[in-house]
Amino acid sequence: MATTEKKQEKKYYTNEELQEFKEIILKKIEEAKRNLELLNAAVANEGNDVTDTSPTFKTLEEGNSVLSKEENSKLAARQQKFIKDLEAALIRIENKTYGICKVTGKLIPKERLRAVPHTTMTIEAKEMQSKRK
Image 1 (cartoon, one colour):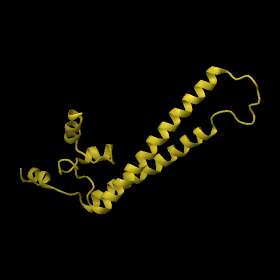
Image 2 (cartoon, rainbow, N blue to C red; image 1 turned 135 degrees about the vertical axis):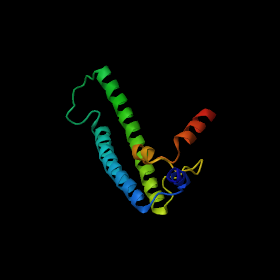
Image 3 (cartoon, one colour; image 1 turned 90 degrees about the vertical axis):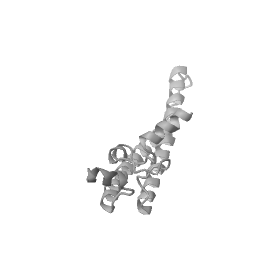
Image 4 (cartoon, rainbow, N blue to C red; image 1 turned 180 degrees about the horizontal axis):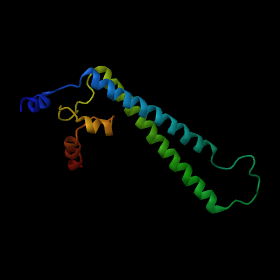
């Protein structure tokens, strides 16, 4: 029973635990940057280029190209935000504030941080926030 109480009283993660999260985040940043490069390349390469000199354009293909470009641009923007959120998590690790819920002040469970390493809230805080909306 004493060990259960100790876990509840824990306010911060240890340096070893923070190092584990840092490694997870660095891998995610690397993967996210690769994905962002692919999305940016897809946006840059879409559309008509010099090799397309045909005077007749297929309206559906052109519309699909514009839609695809917009979707890729939105995905790229989301990927950039994800990278910024992960980088902010790295700063919290350096400050030793990583894993502390910004709403409740409680320690965010390891399982949640492993699944969503850039999170700043416990599930309970997230649910409270969504109920207010």
